[in-house]
Length: 163
Image (cartoon, rainbow, N blue to C red; front, side, top):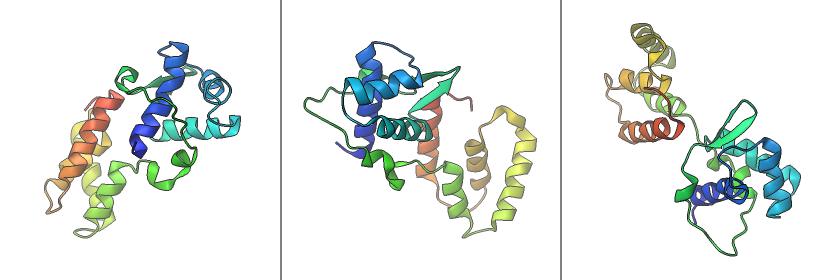
């Protein structure tokens, strides 16, 4: 399993084990640590925090919801995830806007890009996600971001955000 599959599998299990679409933080962490016996309680909290930061679960009204379909996560027998996957820097998704800024800085200054981004935001208001606005700005520059367009599209679908 690659890192993404390990994370999806791990995050899905408390929901599957309890047969619920929503869980409290305690239900999530207790299931990972006490029921499944995969992590210590403190490591289960690390998994929770990373799952939120990575965009795998959302927190609303005190409840957690996965942003992916847990039914699509394949069952694996005799598998015990390692907390280091959730601690590693590379496992946390860097925001698309940060990736775009890194690429754009080779063409224009960060300040110029932010100025263009603000103009685009004024044009569209709050109806368009900031990553999408950044992509629209970059389309006018000579910067390759096709992979980031795909990543943004997938994140929008997974987070059920409006474009």
